[in-house]
Length: 503
Image 1 (spheres, one colour):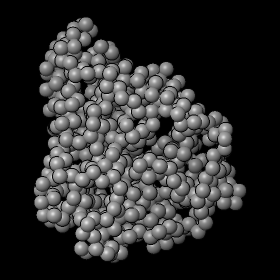
Image 2 (cartoon, rainbow, N blue to C red):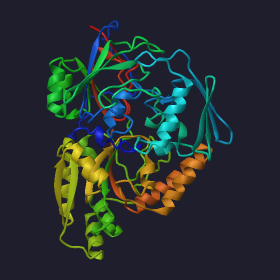
Image 3 (cartoon, rainbow, N blue to C red):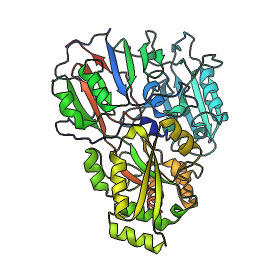
Image 4 (cartoon, rainbow, N blue to C red):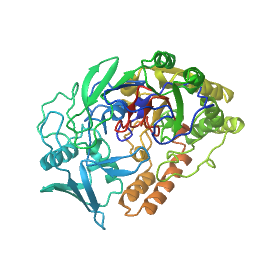
């Protein structure tokens, strides 16, 4: 994915006008009022917007791999809940030394991979050390402070060169995935994990099906299989739901809530999300290298109008959303003021400015239309270039060949990207990088939070980008389905509790 940032450009949700009238505010999965007894032989179909280009979660970008495979197929020593709590997974317990330099995990016994091979302590050692040593693998740098990984019986010990307040969190993601040592599986098209579901079928261009792992070490999945149907178009997804082909619609355009709820078979629910709709500005050259131009762009944007148009979420004026450590309300940094924007452009000596916005086409037209109008009001000609996600990954993310770009970054706790000058944001600030490094060295949460707040304010005051809004999670769930997560489903969809009845 895109570093931890698993740029959720892959969680591309088709943008549209989201109207939450009649939606519930449920934040925890639970049975609906009409649920009958769960059917262990049931199948559940979940709509997603985009599918992965391949299934190699070791090194392929795209949040859809995290949504579908982590927790369900692949696991680590620890995992995280939708609310961000770190819990034990393949480890039955863990402890951290007072100096933050030693992490000790007790590996569960009796765990097997989907191909029947046993999970061994050596598999853990091999997975983590290989990840760290293989730069091509996603999030390998997240283990940079680990000097050794050793096993003594079922005890796995990670020794660090310096404290790393993000290590446990990193181990809940791709950096911590445990694979079978020497596995010969073709990761591009197959998978071999330890989770409650195993890969059953991938119909490229259509769907990905997971089936219950009957040999799972934990509580068995409550449904026989789950199919993720990749349906980019919102109306097509709603039609499929109304036809009984889809049980859950993720990336839901709640403007269609009346359609989907009208028959009484679905409920639209909203949850919290760490998704950030980021207007990236390539400041490496040209007019965007001038902070006054970047500030003018931010000042020209009517953020309240954007939130009103999408009907969900909230304004966000910095890189850290409210649900993440280090959040601070940064609305004092910039406000909507077209006159001030025009003055800033004049001060910068910029006139007749034309810029191109490169945006994945799956986001629709709502945001681009608002931005075109806002920019036009201050004399900026904004040209919209919608592209498929593969092109976005190549041109914007990899080659940094863009002026402006909008994408949804769904991954929690991804501030590190603002401390990485090589990231596609092109932002390079030594003080921010130092503050972030200090936050990692902190051994108490409050100190780490305070350092992140300072760094985030600098990023916003540098107008390194604009944060158009902080998404809300909007999901339509059939009334005979329970246990569907609602919070942060653009980053992870843990199927452990999902159930379906005939009622």
